[in-house]
Length: 377
Image (cartoon, one colour):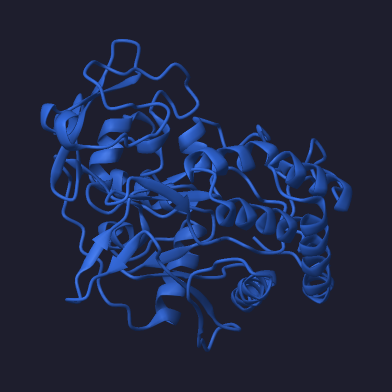
């Protein structure tokens, strides 16, 4: 396979070409046909115009954020490394274009890459307990079933927790002994978020003989059509849009509010949604609120962006004990004061902000108290 060039497609249409520069950055150029009929696949970094775009930073290893979003995080990276090793490749020497080619049509969102290693087909899942065991064995380095099969099930997934995907659902598995009720905890958090007025996807707790249940969430980067088909939706994380290294504390909720106002054309409902999510993360003790845990969906028909449903809402700490995204500069112990400062700066009334913040504080208190002494992956 030629690792020096890759075509990017969207719903079967050619978007453009990725190629490696001599200094190992990944350049991008729109296809001629996309220049006439397409939209900016990254709203700030890649306006629709002729020419070659080259990333100015190495935050994603020399790749633009919108393409880096297609690559997996910790769990998917592990599966990808195992697959490369099976095919005789040294994982630490595999370049970014080859990694995107391995993702092919299986990435989150709507962007696909050609030539692809394989047209990955997501199959219906049956024995979840058996899959959970395969995930556990994979995580601790034991020999497991075919590496290609495991990669097809979850090799493009984000996050650290083991998981598998179908065209419509993502199912997460616990692995450590202290993690066995993580599924019921995440389900409780998502239900609580919905009671707090936050838009969440459909979720389920699937039965298990091994643990308290497997948390399952309906994919919002896929849309079921009236004829039963599945349509991919263009989706970008805040990290990708802002070209931010999500592993560092490089963002404040002021930035997220401003981004939401700009992308969503100052629609008040979207700004209010972001305010609710900020309050929930503060009061429910979700401190892993980094820039990849906020996403936006693009509607090509109406040429507009909107916040995606909320996801990855759990009790979580960070290694340094602070919110990954600060609240008016405070990451350690933000409260009503900081929440109101962010809301008012975004144009929301102080009275409304205080009312919503206190309602969410009251709603989340039993949940935070229940899980605050637990340890989860």
